[in-house]
Image 1 (cartoon, helix red, strand yellow):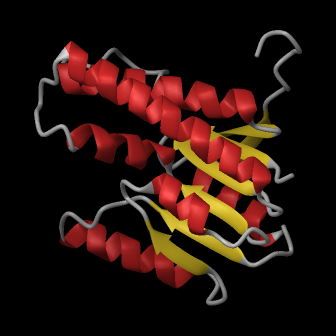
Image 2: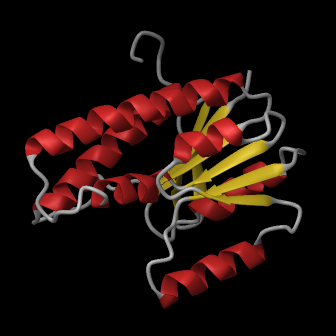
Length: 189
């Protein structure tokens, strides 16, 4: 039964670096599942820099919207690093094609994402290798002044809670420092 490790924190807090260390220290082949979409030159350059920094032996799979497929297709023995849930939720939300999604559309997307996250976690549990899930913590700031921002914050917050409840271990990164979060007490899950 594969372990699930959850790594969260703010932007540029050191989440990816910490998660990459966890994966590297697993002693297994690493399958890196990336969710960033190369929408412009700056993002294409960023993706290229990130790829170049990873060990050559690591396999990289681009999965901006089909995260479940990437998890299912990963070798069971590999350590799977999903970086990141935040961009995956954003990509799926932007696929709705509007700056002001309707409440029924948001509700439908939430149910869809919740089911996919449940399937991702169930698949991760059946793997022999660990799965490291990276995400942004977006609930610590102001309420976004526009509907799309509020929808994103709410969706990601719910997905983060779902993964965090199922994780064997969880860390919050602040300014490059990892704080291990305590386990959720029995009965509170």
